[in-house]
Length: 222
Image (cartoon, rainbow, N blue to C red; front, side, top):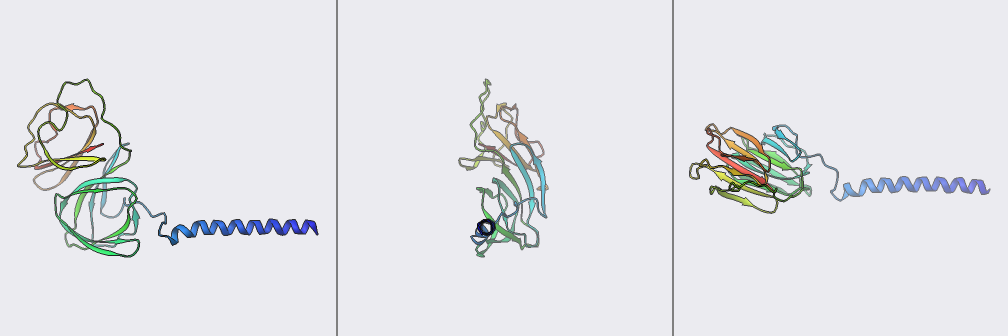
């Protein structure tokens, strides 16, 4: 009889363990905390640059319903074509959003939602996902001026990123300087086509503005 009791007790323990495992899997889903897929890659999003610091995407919001996703990284960027979309929260709340070109985007990680492109001509942007945590400026022995040295337009500054713009009203005069932070340079030619390159902290050079550029955005990653 004692042996049978031990078997029943072990069986009961196994059942309880399985129930606890099922509850552990069920509760996060019930609370809207499911392990959603990342925002990108997806249809309409092209990876244009990636290294240990950032992932840069050229994104079009096509006329389709994208699935729910979670943004794994803080991100910033610039919209370069206007458009409309519907953003839906995990609670089912919908909001229609129109975005104009040259707006600067910034969003912290862990936002979860889904998006639906609704414009005939899609909204387009270059987004920069920041893979690493905040780090300080690098030390250099350069005597050159530190970027931003020639008065670009300040578009956005917070604890994560500083965004500067050169356009037809803000010239990018050539003057040697040093970058004390990593930076992503996003520039657009006369046909509004995005181009991207990465500047490593400690780099010294003459200009951040390519000769063919109509607009230039420098995203300093802090």
